[in-house]
Length: 345
Ligand SMILES: NC(=O)C1=CN([C@@H]2O[C@H](COP(=O)(O)OP(=O)(O)OC[C@H]3O[C@@H](n4cnc5c(N)ncnc54)[C@H](O)[C@@H]3O)[C@@H](O)[C@H]2O)C=CC1
Ligand SMILES: O=C(CO)COP(=O)(O)O
Image 1 (cartoon, rainbow, N blue to C red):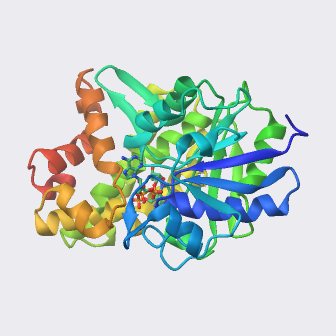
Image 2: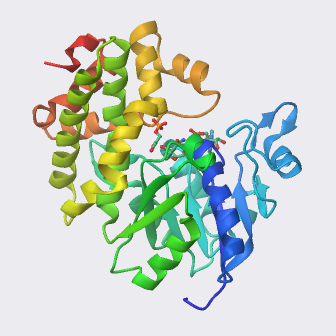
């Protein structure tokens, strides 16, 4: 595998998906071990009277999800999932997690046997029956080895090349250090520094759960509380995130909580993320989540509300909601009309 030229496909072209495609598009030209063309799957939709993928290839800009940022010309948008993935050695998944099952089923039978994947998705599949990381779900469904990347990465800031860090998690049983380093090369730039840790679950679970903490931070902002309150929300949220990760995933390394995928992502999301912004608006406007998402995000998707529901279903099926009172409060404020003031105290 190490001497082969890797062809890369990006599955996703939303706000973060487009930034990841931009980074990869630049990086494959820097290293001879990658094919210089990068496919980017664009979910078919019309924008400004034109098919979005066609517009991206004409303008080299994703004007719907990342306006004002140019894409390198070697990133080629395509609305046909089979064509995007059939020759790919590396599949980079960056779509909202609710769309993963459908995308995976549309890819089945199209992949190279040697393909492998990296998930940049921040979400979780959990319900009353059990819990699964998104990367585990993709790996099992498509029968490919998976890795994961997560970090303090508000997309619009990374797009403007403002310095950020991220963490690449890999499983030492299926991905060698050499392969993990080559993946690191694919994503690392001087303004986007990617560290590697042999701990997929530790990296990924935090990326999913921090979105619940961000909702609480948004409630606090919506109530007009100050920074001490928000710091309290972050502290309590971090403790529950740590407890949840430890309780339901074996082998998570303590050091991973201190990487970009951990505490740093909680901080940035609680100050600059979409979940925070929509939660502030939820408290102020008292409108339903769907209306707020449509009004504020122009087609981008929230992950925290769904994750809050999923975590609640999972915990309540096991009579464990009392063990996670903070997550439970976020759920009740979000979906059962509980007073947002109850987030603290
Ligand atoms: N935006 C950000 O700042 C960051 C996002 N992430 C994570 O990356 C993942 C992807 O997020 P974004 O790229 O920001 O997406 P986004 O929030 O911009 O969502 C829009 C994307 O969803 C696609 N979409 C809409 N309906 C669809 C359908 N039925 N089937 C398939 N795709 C559909 C759209 O075509 C578009 O590509 C999420 O898990 C998010 O949490 C991670 C780090 C930063
Ligand atoms: O994950 C993010 C920053 O690291 C972005 O979070 P939001 O989805 O809340 O914008």
